[in-house]
Image 1: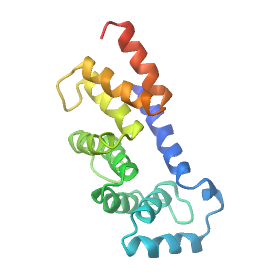
Image 2: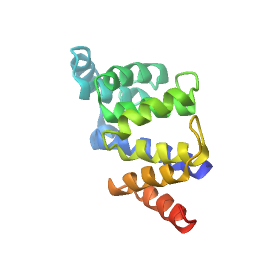
Image 3: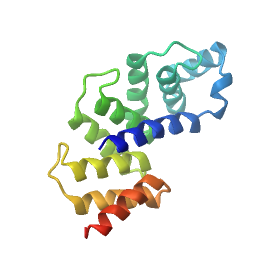
Image 4: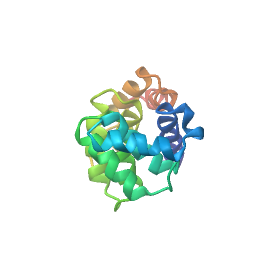
Length: 165
């Protein structure tokens, strides 16, 4: 589902922007401030550092460092970081591609009502990626994503509904 992958990549950019509309003006000093906070265990700052490395904002783009910081926040329950970890595993960015691990991280995040993770779970169930194909379950996850305000979830829900699922 190539169009879904494009949606997800765009969604990651939106997530990055949601954590810092001011990102275009982030200076190196801001990076070091966030990093200091992140090193002290601040989960939001860990996620922000991951986003900064992912996008190359205030620091050189570094997918491996991005993954490391997202993982720290994800293990503490941050749903945005969990979704980003899932995407990195799904796409093989900064880590070896592993759809099973991606699904596990999407599940953790989706259970916290993260709409992009819910959308990805819907895609996994629709396509049978690492799970038994189940379009009813796919429709359920797309519906949850829609309920959380993600239009793409609504679109995929509608398509499955029209096909009788």
